[in-house]
Image (cartoon, rainbow, N blue to C red; front, side, top):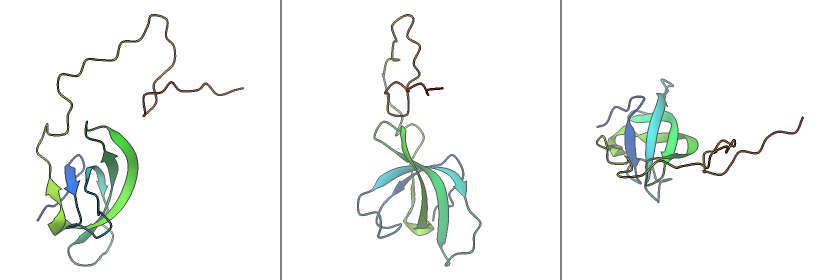
Length: 105
């Protein structure tokens, strides 16, 4: 049985809860100490894509026995070159790689 900790990357499937018909990777940022049913836990964290990038922040309620710890390095991209920006390019990328829009004042 996995005892999740902040920083862990988990493979969350239907074994953890029926709500996860489609498995997902999840990076734990907090394990709540809220009282729950025996063997269940509330987790805050980020759903990850195949490259290991955070795509959505979520809170999930899961059975610890159904969680699987992902070994270090499995979700990390390999041999990916850094994104090169043209000189003088001032916009910051957002979570999805699109330029951020400056707020009007």
